[in-house]
Amino acid sequence: MENQAGDRQFLGFRSRLTPDIRQRLGVRIGKQPDATVNELRGWLQTQESVAISQQRLSAMILEMGLRVKQKVLD
Picture 1 (cartoon, one colour):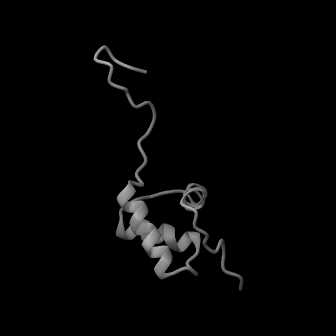
Picture 2 (cartoon, helix red, strand yellow):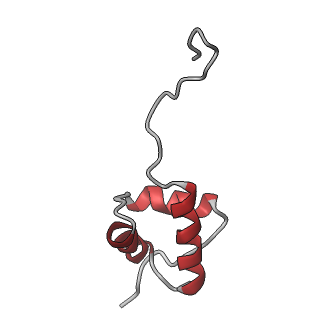
């Protein structure tokens, strides 16, 4: 959708996972490759003040071309 000036309007929500946060997440995964998705969610919430669902975080990690553990086996 465009306004009269020809500028595009953003429809929907902007991601809280900015390119900077994605980059730091990639570094975090590189430093701790055995981290689970839930551990990374906790890190995002405490260090970056970003709340995200496990499903969305998993999808984003795959979009980044990375892999992490899904769960810890007891």
